[in-house]
View 1 (cartoon, rainbow, N blue to C red):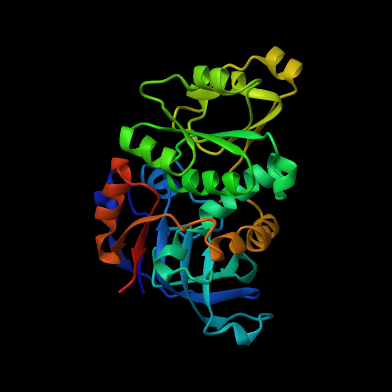
View 2: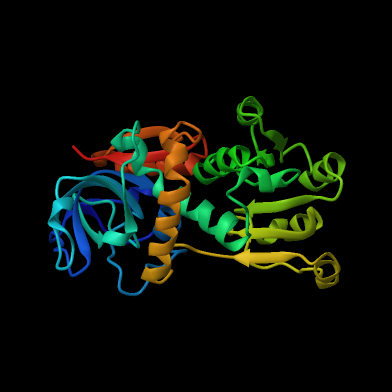
Length: 330
């Protein structure tokens, strides 16, 4: 089968399509014929040798796909064959076929195309596992009156999904972006946009809230730590999911203790299989109905043919996208 395997590290030009053995589904797994694969920041970091493949996973790129189940392993109901599904992966998505734990898949949401679906499960699982499971965000709108949140990178795939979920749940949302047109887009979505190139988000949050925000979803890390902590309300939660601004910083522990602040540092890719299964189950119960009813849009920015994987990564690296980028299989 055709696949993109990690052979060397560097820019998008290191990504080459090669021939690899087709996987076989093991016990508890299904085999998906991949129709589209989502591109994530983890893929770009892996390409740069900044995010090693977890032990036991394949060297094929790709953490999420949408496709059709063509075979099942032992212990899996054969009636699943022929179903269109999305899958959360540890690796293996940039390929014509992938074998995956059946509990890490969900049906493609109604009213959503295969291309759109390919970019959904990674962002949905990331946002749900952090804001709901880690930070305790209620999934009942009535419980969120007066709650506020700050989302960094509001026009990225994760940021767009997070702002929509938070708004649906009744949370007032602030979000950062670095371009006027991106800020204008966020304002049009009912989000309080902060241009981080021209504004200090800590000052904006101090001016616009009484005590700070209850939740922060952060992709920057070290560079923002002090300002993030100062922007949290009492009992607030900071969820750090990426380190674009560095991995190290000093924290004011006195501030954290006096305001009872909570920091959650998480990754999704390397979690145990059972944890992933629980997250996917929760996404299916809470988030999938909101997508099917149109409250949360898939957020697809652009799709590229599989053969243009280098061009797709170049576009991803440019930062010009708004939402998700996917590869489509011919």
